Image (cartoon, rainbow over all chains, first blue to last red; front, top):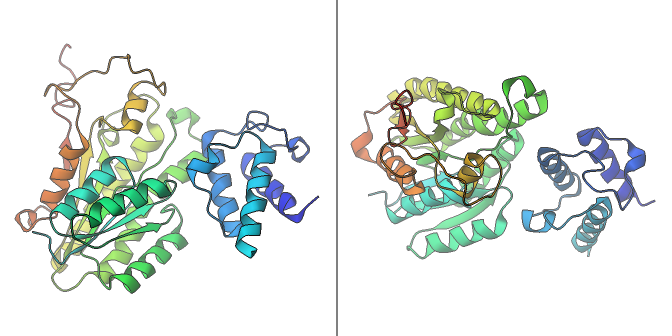
Length: 81
Length: 254
């Protein structure tokens, strides 16, 4: 498991108060029981943690936890590149 | 009228904030467009403002975060060197009844809708010169009247209006006029969504104010521009209601 994914899980668990075990790539936001405010707060926390920007236009395309992780990993890689 | 002035409009990538930003630019002010979640729309607003021949810049900041507010004002100080007008417009919230209002939604809404005025004003005043300035906030009639599922936002807007009064008296001797504009339902994407109970059903009827139409973003922007003008210098700490008569007619049969 990547460090990035671990950090994202830490953030989601802290904000959404869901079980860590459910955070599989295919887990939807309904599975996490995350409401729209949870989602915004997760985005804000990810942005601060990784120093990236996640515009709404991109965030609206996320369907599950895996999309989240892929997006953040790509952004972090772009930043380093 | 506002030539040579520098204005910051929080939350001005779209809706009421965008219309205010364009209105102040049309009056000659340089305008800083603060945004948080809508970069493309903020950049479009900046492009539209620059077309008017004034300076404009987008600054991303979550104004619910005290550290981000400080960073935003550091950028304004560096790039503009001053600030004459602060329009505290950015707002957020979630539909909640008072009994369902948990601490998470409370803190989120209060930080963005109320505390941001206090923190932004503290920073803005330090950038305002001896000629004074203007601080105008956008409130909502939900501060004084009870609207369905509106506890989180309504309570935060009541706090916003109280902060406005305290700042107003403290800052009046320095030539800084602090006021608020309070609107009933405004014909924006967010406003109409609320009116339709969160459903984007364009057929759902919306009750009209006695004035016969919904309040527009231009109605708000025109009053904000007036409050920013020299003509309004003696209006201190007031909340101007723009609701087409809705609140006064609340007890009338419809």
